[in-house]
Image (cartoon, rainbow, N blue to C red; front, side):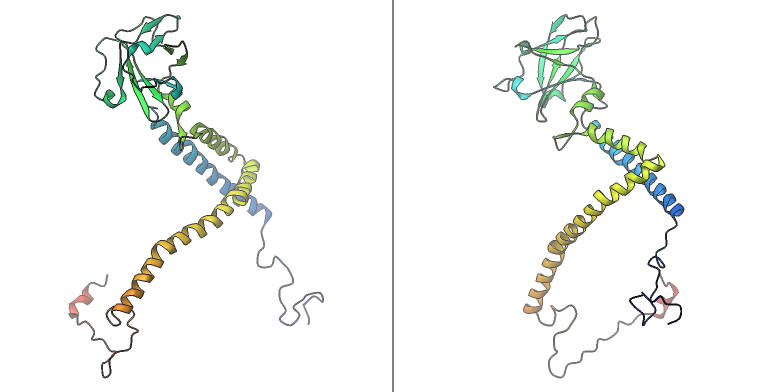
Amino acid sequence: MPGVRSDNPNQLVGAATHRDLYRFEDPAAERVRLTREARKLSLGFLLIFGLLFGLVGFSANGLWSKDLFVAFDSEHWPADDRVDDPNLFAFVFADATSAPVERVVPWESAAKEAAPAASGSTRVVVVVGRERRALLVAAAAHGGGPPRAVRFSGGDERPVLDGPHHAWEAARLFGVVPIRYFVVGGLVLGVLSLIPPLGRSIYRFWMAAIAHPLSWINTRLILGLFFAVVFVPAGLWLWVRRKLWPVEGDPLQRAPRPEGSSYWHDARRREPTHFRRWF
């Protein structure tokens, strides 16, 4: 056939001999497209990991709090869970001096605890894991500023952190993975994705190794759950209705009618004025 290569496997219909005839990609245009998509991905990294994870996770762990925080393992917590003994703790200041804790308020009543009346007095929130907390209150301010640590009766010390530093250290995803890893990783990937050559490589890797496998899994998982939760119960209910009430329970009205009855339905009569408003 004229105009058809001899090595074309489909000689009868004259199929396209150029493999990219219907999918031709200009390399320059493809680079522009990948660069544009990489910028969108960069914005997603910055917004989701940097802003959403960081702002929500850190805010839930005292980012905006004016109190001071000290976190330690539960092994330092009294065995009988009594934290109202001020002798268990002492404040340690920058000049290595220490001051006793006036009182310890259990966290259940800490919300009702008014701020100490003494000017410049100290409030330190003790955080143990994610369940048990207490509030340490010092009667008077110390000349060296806020305490740098809390000393336990056994001699161990734990640093005292302000709200932002405590949120940076304590915020964790599901109580396991520190949120700061996601924030730093999202910011780094977001900035690198703005560099065209690196951004295109990051975009290709993200789509091939993460986005496409997740789409394959999520599509089957979400649609499978939706089918099992919505369509299966609805189908069973319609089947039961059709068995119990063959005529009324069949929304498609497929059941045979009694002898002599008509399958026609009277149309609902409407006033001609309804044409005045079509929408």
